[in-house]
Length: 416
Image 1 (cartoon, rainbow, N blue to C red):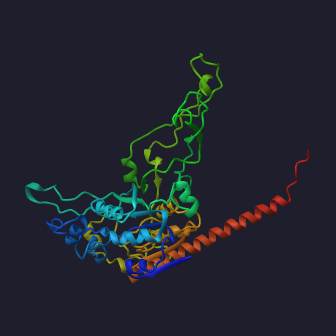
Image 2 (cartoon, rainbow, N blue to C red):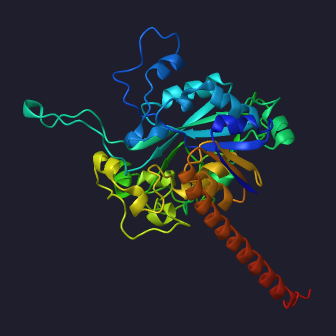
Image 3 (cartoon, rainbow, N blue to C red):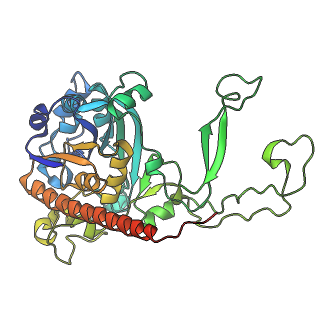
């Protein structure tokens, strides 16, 4: 089920029942306002200071990025109320305004659990370049990352008790492992049975095993662009598979490595960049405009200046003219990380619907709220396109399952 609301998020949230969503994944306004040097002095707390310095316009001069709604605890308090106990919130922000949003989220009653970093190469520097003897100096760096606040509504009881009651409270680690063809060590709790071991470190220690089911998901994600890949260090060659087909070593060596091989397996040279350790979500213009009519010419080129972005005719030249669209694959990964199977995802700042696309493609229910009628219509078209793609995937899987079942009917059982 997908429900898209047109209206102010606080007003819409007020009409939603308590504890009705499994997760919240959202990309609220970043409030990149020009506040004339900072909040007014003498204000008594972070929120009144932020509001005192707020402007009516923000990123690219857009009104929806002005104001202070993402810095207000009352907004996140409503999000807390409609989220199930133990439910997670993932909210994007900008490098210079993240702290105000995170403080508001925490003061609303959430537990801040982590900060996730989204790294990309498509940012536009908005810098005032100086002239004369100071030529070559500017006022800003090129933005290349956006932080996400990972927070959780407090548990009721232990994690296990909360998950058993509400179905939320933990992260979907195995469902979000970073794909890898390499052997990856997995560490899990095990009772070693040591007679003189105490606590969880020795007697109840850990067991290592190796598999190719992927790496543990990290709090860093990237877009896979050449510029980003170049920023990661080289990490060539992984340890080859351990082999114990040799003669027994001395009495001071115990366990599987007592029999040291005479022919060790070679190191694995699959990929040398450390970027492979992190989830990669590639952006594309086709994804941005999915379900929408659009021309072949983009509104701006990747190397355009911020001024070009501000003056471009986005609505006329691009089907999806929202300027801050996240890749659908990134939103799929984030929804899957914090939402149980068949769960319900909420996005109170829907924009052009990237969270909704990700949620629907993952088989989740989705509810979104958007203030702009134009963006609401874009989100509807993009999410409907995702629903059609999801239905086709389900049909293809069902057809494959039926075909496999029919083949099984003709298999001759082994005679013993």
